[in-house]
Image 1 (tube, rainbow, N blue to C red):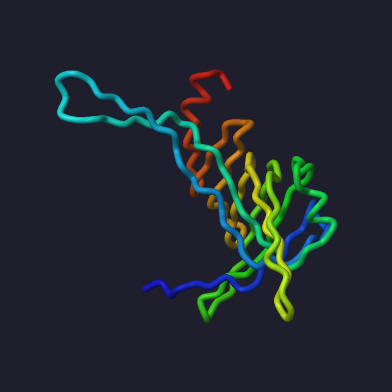
Image 2: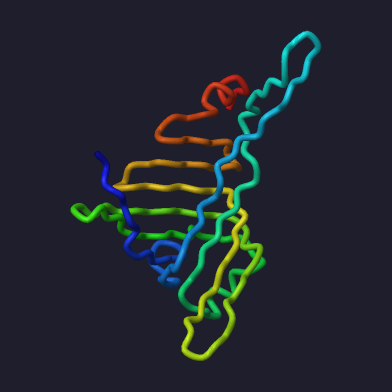
Length: 166
């Protein structure tokens, strides 16, 4: 029986070594394949087929602070990887957690300023590169520019790319 796991801390780096801040929360992009619906005469209902492309990917990263370095990212492409490092624990075993993002930082939202409250900044990113690893095992590798969609090690577009000569 699997034990429930909890994320225990996340730190963010911009590029390989530049500490950007501590993460309060992270909402990963929704992996949602585009589909085409067919409603043909003589069949009993609508049939859907995948198009081997994804809907727009969007992620939210909430930092426990508000800094000029975070503000400087808003309205620009991430020129380097945004790397999130964390630890996942089931109470008995610690496992590493790593997320890599590239994309356009389209929005910034700060929480309400109140006495004795934490200051946080949420960045919304239109993602074009998303990678997720647990204990260095790749769970997701999505690179929209290169039409790479690997989920749990399986390349979902391998045959399509071969057919297109890519």
